[in-house]
Length: 112
Image (cartoon, rainbow, N blue to C red; front, side, top):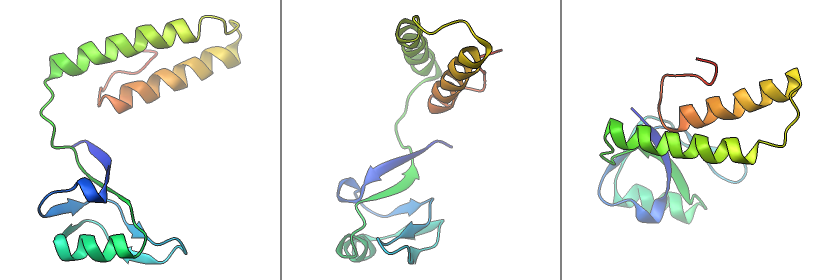
C-alpha cells in the first residue's frame, strides 16, 4: 500500500488517515489509523491541519511506474554528472537513487 500526503480540502468522502495528526503545538489530534468523515475534516481544518496522509487511490500500472522511474533516473544521472567519483559522492548518489526507488514503490535498490 502506497501512502501519500494530500490537502485536507481535496479529500472527498470518508477516508482513513494513516499517520497521526498533530496541531501546531504538537498536541495529538488524531491517532492513526482512523477513518474520518466530513465533520472530523472540518474540525481538523479549524485546528490548523491542512494535510493528512492517506492511501494512494490512483491506479498506476506497474509499466507506468517503471517508465516514470526510468525517466526520473535518467534526469537524476544528468543532474549528478558533475559530482566527483569519491566514495562519499557514490554513497550520496546511491542514497538519492534509493529514495527515488522508494518513491515509486519499487523493490529494487540503486546498487542492485
